[in-house]
Image (cartoon, rainbow, N blue to C red; front, side, top):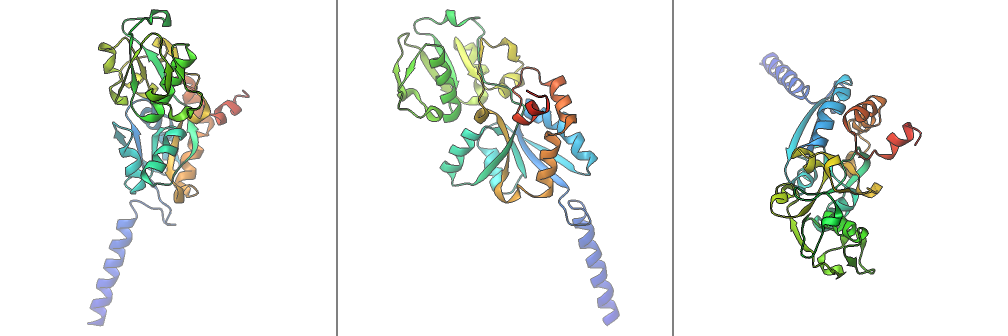
Length: 276
């Protein structure tokens, strides 16, 4: 009887070890990574430029695509994914505050900048009385859009307003009576048919078939508005997170960027590699 029980215990132990082997190495290191990203350039960067590097290191990577700016952080916070790639640090800071989270964004990636696009016009000189302009409706990207309009000399914003959270209520001068229409960020490309101009985040512009050089104007993107890899705070120093960062910082990925991401804003570590 004892021999039978010992045999059953041994079989069960082998089964458990075998089941665990699909996600971890013999040392217990996590070898499967699930990354959330919005469809378009950042998902493509992962598939074409980053995953091949990670696979050489023995990792298996799964991409989960999202079509909004809320669910990727919820999924990450709840442990459904291991990292995400879609947001800038200003957006994450506000999201953490609003949702009582502590997600972190340790490094940026090559970023397609937000731009002002139009199907009807080719110049800021075409902006006249009552021109309609669509903007993303999330607070961070709405603020970016309004700040650009002020840079163009089209509106004036209250100087006491916080630049990263500027909204329509902070506009103190709108001489041309511009009609600003905030819409879901993913819908900004579609809004071109109903408006004169639209501010469109680079990922949604490219995903819709637009080209970065087709924009009437492109943002001079500061570092805080680059797109960042986001992780749970407790995972930052884990081997899988370090392997992901190493892949992005590699010479191989820099070569991929130079060949496939023309017009993108490069993160500091890539500029340093190029001596810029």
